Length: 165
Image (cartoon, rainbow, N blue to C red; front, side, top):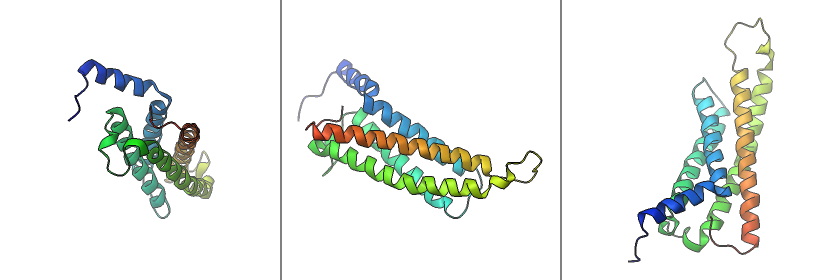
């Protein structure tokens, strides 16, 4: 069994990851993803919004797992995906997230447009226009940070780097 790093070394590695570009991007993905699914889940939703909620929650949980595995430097413990494959695993996750967020954005824009009639000041009935608009903005922000992460990961992979940090 390899020797365990000392406590100051672990803290130093955690701070190094949190200050890295990927650490900041992962935090933004978690925050924007949580904003999206909380916005949707806190209000009445139906139909195709279930797909958006599925994408948001799935990738929020997966991103949270990747974040903590990388933060704690435990990616070697993941069978088949860890170790020298960790950068490819992160890249595949980010590509899948970006691809699935695109139709989610489309759904949210469609729902926002369908409810734009109730954006009038004198309209007094329950209207989800602002909820859908907020969710569409969060979905766009999520897709954007995943695309930035894809570009960053692809550049690192092309340079032949193996580590995530």
